[in-house]
Image: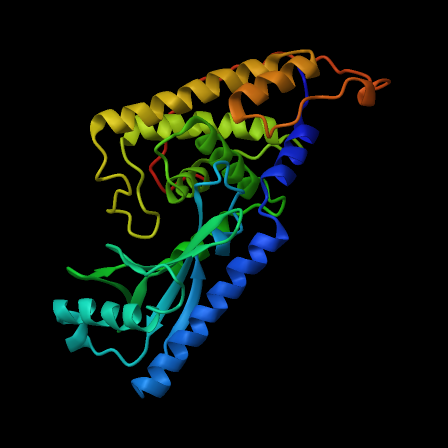
Length: 324
């Protein structure tokens, strides 16, 4: 059985976002923060908002885009201060607060900001890549976190989600790496799964295999397939009644399951391949050409250890939040 863990580490390096991109994302984010603080304190003369980094940029699960036309996505929560319970009960106030944030960033870039369902989006374009910074607008009242949308306020706690993620993160970083591998796979095959879907699915179902990211990915995908087959949903670990794919049709859900089943089948074949060079080519077929091909000459002199082929029996599924 070929051990391709070293190739997975090289693959991880290849799909990491480069420092220049990260610095630009950080600089633009900080520029928006300054703009909003000045707008609130100098023009509106009210308490400036607080800010909270969320999403893949905060969790360090962002990967390099595969298609130059795709955009990097940064989520930066804007937390309004001094919002009253009466204002939370007022649906119109949610829209008004969103307009306040939109007005503040209208001249942030040449491209006009977008008013989306759950955030205000500021768009940027560099020479070789594009990115946007999404600004969800929150208020924390009476111990609860609310997200402002044009149709009113909804309970939403990004801080609790980040805490949940970090509590489940192994010290080896393997869970985070597995998320990155699946995001790279999604981009390569064109899966409908979004980053938040992959993050939750891996967070609930990650199987750690020390020193073997290839095996960990295989076993984790198998657990994810079982979870999706049993639930036909991806439940928000913070609001466990919220299905993150509630707007998907049954056909779309089945398509995602089938794609993951196909990934699991091909990954099993790659891991059970005795020749590492052949195994690496199978991984390339699964994950794309960014995955490295094994260099046979560089590995001469190493002793191969015979291991019985892997097989997988379907486990009795646990409840959605009982995975360790």
